[in-house]
Each structure stands twice: as C-alpha cells, then as structure tokens.
Length: 109
Image 1 (cartoon, rainbow, N blue to C red):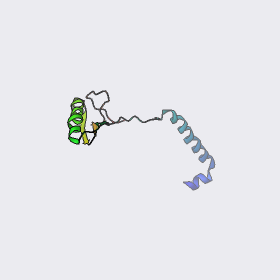
Image 2 (tube, helix red, strand yellow):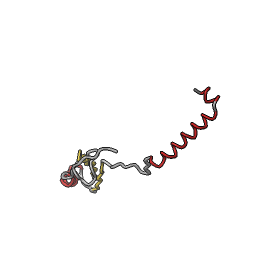
Image 3 (tube, rainbow, N blue to C red):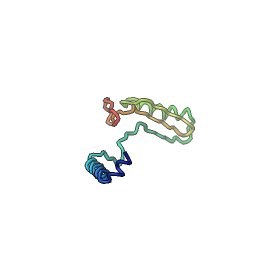
Image 4 (cartoon, rainbow, N blue to C red):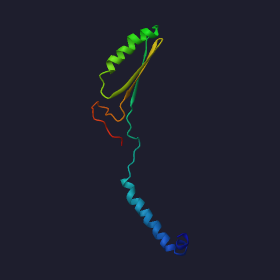
C-alpha cells in the first residue's frame, strides 16, 4: 500500500485533505472539560480537645459526631479515631450518590 501511494502522490494528498477535513468537522462535537465532573466521596472532620484523654475525646467528640452524621443518607462508613487531645472522623459516602442527599444513585459519566 505504501508503494502504491508513493507512485500516486495525488491520491496520498487527497487522503490527507479528507482526513484533515474530517478532523475539522468533528472538532466542535468533541467533549471538552476543563475540570472533570467528579464528586468527592469522603469528608474529614478534625477536632482538637486540649488536655483530654483518648477515652474523653471518644465520649465527648466521636459519639457526638456519630449522632450528628448517622442520619445522612447514602452514608457508607464512618470511622472516628480518638487520640489524646484530638479526634479525626472520616465519613465515606456511597460511590455515585447524589450530593443533594436524594436516594437515587447516579451512574458514572
């Protein structure tokens, strides 16, 4: 095939023009995104409780966070880590869930 195009340069040039024209006509219909549509599936909560032991942090902070976040729809998992003077909670949502809290699951785009 390369030899045929070498012997017929006009055909090669016509093919080049055809491919360039197809690219120019297809360019406006291409999907372009500056920032992809991605929704975060995790939220982190960090709380400082100075001078408290780990058990006090768990009772005063982690349990209250759990009570507050428990009613959130589409919550997959809540992990709370209590250390001396700090608490760190990570709430993971169901992948593909709508951010408005509705129960309908979105299909990834």
